[in-house]
Length: 114
View 1: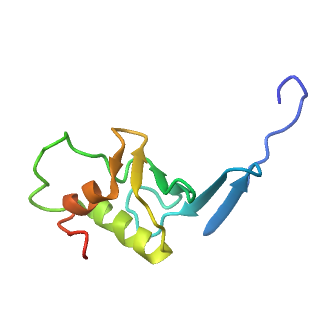
View 2: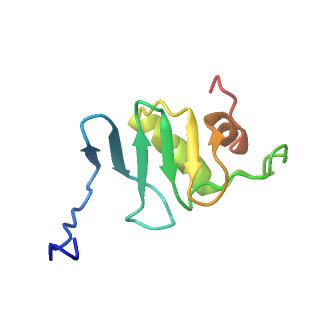
């Protein structure tokens, strides 16, 4: 872009934005209900069933017990995934290791049946 002197295009995401290159799709959603930032976005790769997020869920160490009190941001993330009907199998946080959706469920005190 700099060599071609093109200006960056900045687009707002009000609820959902879909980006594709023809073979892979990235869905970008505004994350409602978070206390972290009212402009928080999450990414979802539907074919791969991967959620990409930052700051609203950082997995604990493997085999660590869940927190005694679930973190509000973790609960909100899970609730928003349910509201958006995203079939997440893996969470790839920008801070921390990749984990399964089961790790988030355990962190907020939910079983896979909830």
